[in-house]
Image (cartoon, rainbow, N blue to C red; front, top):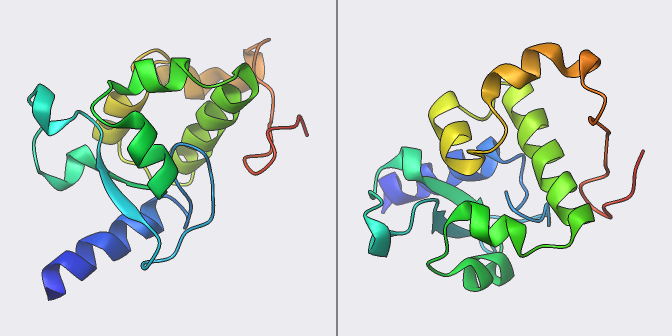
Length: 131
């Protein structure tokens, strides 16, 4: 039981206490563990394939691939998700192997030239509005 709590604590810390998908604030009691690549599609049970999710996102994602799930969100929420991932990655909370699983569309190298990117905008992860 202790090991499971440590994993949950790490996942919650890694996502800055929020659902990785929608940014909803979570606690150890309210968070759920989601497999980035669903187990039903060959995903592992390893830590590198797990993230912290709210019950709603975890249920809605079900056994969808991450890209399909994100594509099902409204555009504002998609941008907020990508902004959240970028922030967590830049803060060193999100490791490269999870980045690659969570956002296969935006290459990690893109973060090196963020200031040069004409499409990059900061979006509030709580409301989805541009800052």
